[in-house]
Every structure is written in C-alpha cells, then in structure tokens.
Image (cartoon, rainbow, N blue to C red; front, side, top):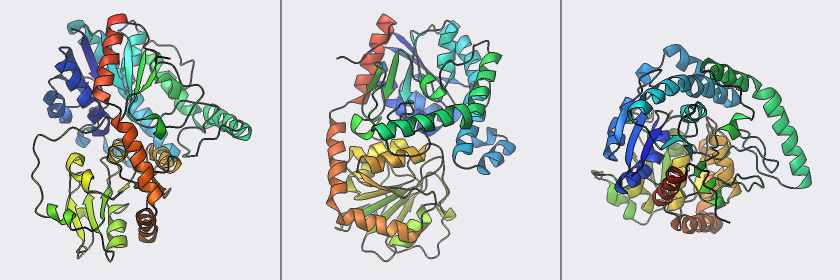
Length: 435
C-alpha cells in the first residue's frame, strides 16, 4: 500500500478531474488524503479519500472568502492581463500557504507521492524543499513552450514549418522576455519568501513534473511538439462519473422527438448568462431544434428573456453522463473538462470563450476539426445561428468528433493514472513513456 497526498486549487474544474483517480487509488488499497477547499469536501469524501481543509491562505472555494477588491480588479481585466492576474493573486500567492500546510500534513501523513493539478504550485515547491516526488495533472491545454507552437494564450494554430518555427521563436521570446516578465518576477519573489531559488525555466515548463505528468486528453486533440518530455503521458480525458442520483426534469423526453438537440453551457467559472446562453436562446428561438441550457449554477432568473423561447429547456445543472448521449451540437465557452466530455460522446462543438485559457481550447477545437471557434466571449445571435447550422449541415464536424470519440474509447484515465502513480510511488524515479 502507498500513500498519496493530493492538492488541488479549490475550484470545481480543478477538483473534478482528480475524483476518479482518487477513487481508483483507494479501490486498489492505497491511502489517499486530499487537500482543497471546504466547499468541495463532499466531493472529496465521496471518493473515500480523507479530506484536509486549507488551513493557511485564502480558500476561494467559497466566493465569500475572496476580498471584493480582488474580484473587482479581476473583472476589470481582460485577456492576458486577467490571465496574469489569476496566476499572481490566486495561484502563486496560494502556494505560500500550500507549502506550509503540506509541510505540516506530511509530518502526520508521510506520503510517498504528491499529486496536484498544474495550477497548484505548492506540491512542486514542497518537493524542492526535500519533500516526496510529485506528479502533475494536466487539466487544460498544454502550455509547454515549443518551437512548433505559438505562446500559450494567443489561441494561434501551430506551425512547424521553417517560417512557422521562426514565427514561434520570435513570439516566444517576446512573451517570455517582455509580456510575461512581470509574472515571472512575481513568482520568483514569492518563491524567495519560502526560501526557494528563482525558476531557471519559464513557468509553463516549470509546472511539468520531472517525474510524471498526466495529460487529460488524447494526442489527437493536442498540438504535436517535437520536444514533448518523456514523462508526459496522454491518459485520455478525466470523464465525469455517473451521478449517485439525478432527478430527471419533466421535459426530459422532449429530447427524443427527433429534433436536433443543441446544448449550451456557460461553464462554472465565467458564468455570465448574457455572454452565451442568452444569445443562443435568441439565435435558435425560431429554429426547429430543442435548446437545452445549463447555467453553471447561476439562478435561472439571471436569464433576462421574457418570455423564454418555447423550444428552450433550462436547468442550473445537468449531468453530462445523462445529457450528452442526446446532444447533436454543444455550444460552450471552452471549459476543458466539458469539451473533453463532449468529444467522448462524439459531439461537435461551437466554442465562444476568451477568459482564462479558453482561447487555447477554442483553437484546438478548430485545429482538430471537431467544431467552430467563434473567437469571442460575446458572440452575436447571428454568429451562433450560422455556426450551428453549418455544423448540422456539414458532416465532417460530426465525423471528426466521432474519430476523437473512438480514440478516447481506447483510454481509461483512472486506471492508467493509478498504474503510473503506483510505479512512481514504488521507484521514486521518473516514469517515462515506453518506446
């Protein structure tokens, strides 16, 4: 039996991917402790893991714990500025408390391996301070710097041609030396506060564990890179598990009337219904389709349409396990886990997101041919209607999505991850991809 200490940023999109892995480890007889926010305690404990709350620093699993000034400043920023703000004040600042808490926890629970999502820096920093080896969960598009790809965040297609490599090298230089310089300096200042030296590499590469990196997708959805590290394993998506219980809405059988089912989701972070749900309902109100909307937990009353279209069905949350088998097109702001779930069911996508890392996910949807990237956070009803009609009338999108569905079916992420983590726990050595 091995001991695993999991650490995740206290947000649903960072916790959910690790749930089936924790459950798998426990079913194999291992002991798992899991450190994250208190609002996520029930999710953690449902796997059989021991929940450990955040003791030091800000637990932003409950928005009430976030200072208003921090939220107001974040809302005023867009694009790269908001991306850097999140990394500074939510992820990097949190690492100080993570280091202290993990150090204390390890005295009581001497874990063999630390497992964290890529934004939870504390596990790597504790390892640097003579802690156990750490493994990382890739819960979003890969950010590894490469001569084959443009910098992460621009949402640009890869180009490994001679010109493309020149373009990529120039852009990567500008990003690292200029646009991200203040972020690198900030991270290094925080590292100094916990007696760690400055990073000798950019932070996109620094979050890749030298022992084991588990990327939650299949190769066909990720840009090819000639410099992929040997300890990076594609393990397939972290798919949502069947819910323990679900009360089906009274309208559920409406999805069986032969009309195309269009699902629109606002995700769980950028949840403004006016961005995507409202224009989708407007766009498809007169079309012969059924629109199923999920607000990401926001009250349905936040949808300011009166009356609601007759072909709309709206809920705060609908488990993908039950919904996606009925869906013909999914309209999304580009949340990574939701996109992967859609592809696991062969559902083509319309992407419209510009916050966090969503431009990169939209770009991969376009690159892999599984959908249309609208390249905006606030699409117009006309843009949405045209995109949905194009996907419904163009079989290549469904065919490409079905191709990824077949790829995904060859992977069992929890079992693959558990096997690799067991190897790391046993050997304490990097776990390389077999040649």
